[in-house]
Length: 530
Image (cartoon, rainbow, N blue to C red; front, side, top):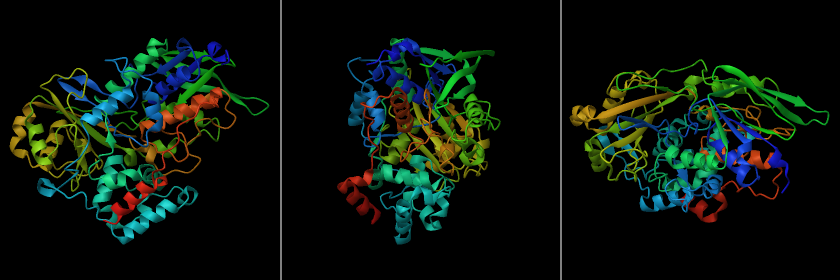
């Protein structure tokens, strides 16, 4: 191996999973000394959108990720080499496998109807026209689909089916989202089609993803000397173009705890720039307050992309993704329960022990509310007599069925009232409220990566002529891959590192094509005809 990595420095802008994965690949596969790697993060904590925090008085996660066996090839490749914090002989990947073998997902109440009735979710409700519309979308090239929306390809009947209620809430699709992204999801996750009603293909981490993935990964990096610089916002990047067309990053402009600073890059250095953020400007509420909806881009991630996008026509168009908050936002909430009463009642209704049921969606909810009851403990410091429930609503501007106001203006206490109403458990509301803390989170850009787009709106991971820089995150373009997944960020990091370092002998795991397996294709066909 060349001595070049020993003399090079790598600057990773942003502390999300894409940057952490890139740092790991630089060390593991590129021979980079850890002490030559700088992770520049504005916030006091790394992990980006993969968060999990709080105390027994109130825990919170902004999102809930459901991993998947077949499709997450790059993530598994990374986690196979990262040991857990409790046993260095056990990888994070092994821990996930063992946990899911012990607590397999088999939802018995995937859909809940009016009057807290468990619906027969195995009846997908698709008719002949729905199937034809699905087939049409699958066979159309992306160049023909273009910036059209999902609602442009399906009739009203499709949007009322059990299938769409399950698919959209599993992956957080809105009818106005990109039809290209939906097509990619169908092609990638078609193996889930026959098991949508049980979500038995879901793989979960033992704890929340911050405790189970981010903390072990950061520890592994720190042990190898990686430098984490917090309170650092990268505000601009200087590029040069050489006579041969090669483009280079020469300087990073920083705001370091309120003071201007720079990093000058030599010819041997590399920059990995995270573009945008799905959880930028997330705002938190409480039992007595609704979260603010932030619209003025206070987070640095979007501003950096807007600044550098103006420098080249192939650096993407961030306004395609952050230009319509009302089409991208939704709200999640975390319940911290200091009594098992509600969990026992949910178990009676659903037939699932905590950690085995995945999403429960209230199909007729005006907010289109869904909840998950995770296995306890879900946080590292969670006591045995404290429990959590996570949920979210897709339609935050509609009046609730029980509180009579939009979710976006509801307090945590009012969200609890709405939830108990859909569960048919208003009889225990006072008891539950007395022992429960609800923290709602409004996220203005949470599904922005699903925005209708053209081929020019997302830059390539390694743009044309890029000699020492690459882009990371959910707003880069990886052909055939699906955004809004941890896999996308990790795969992009792998492309970035291998591409810039010329690691031609390192093979990037292939993208899973569900219908390439004849058995899967047959199972899908059977499910579609039910």
